[in-house]
Amino acid sequence: MAVVVPIVGWLIPGGGHILLKRYVRGILLLVSVVAMFLIGLGMQGRIYKPNGGDILDVLGFVGDVGSGALYFLARIMDWGNVMAANAAADYGKTFLIVAGLLNFIAAADAHHIALGKKP
Image (tube, rainbow, N blue to C red; front, side, top):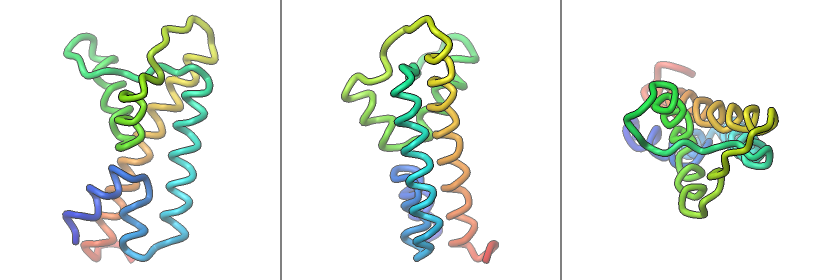
């Protein structure tokens, strides 16, 4: 269970907590990550693609891929592929990255709960 929970938690935001029967925390994480991701897309934020170029692009990709299935859905549907030159798009890009980073932290939290290190 300690191996499955963080993987499910990464793919589906809050899914690891829901598997551990921490329903309130899982639903709050699901709503938070999905809302931040959708707000970022609504602000025309850019979704990073995997590349080996600039270090900031690599870090942006790591942050974005943290959103799990949301990232893959956005790439399949070709969302977040615009190069907008306004301040809102820059904030939207930040929202997308932070949503992924929050999801990484949530998956690690679910892992610690599954191991019994956290009540």
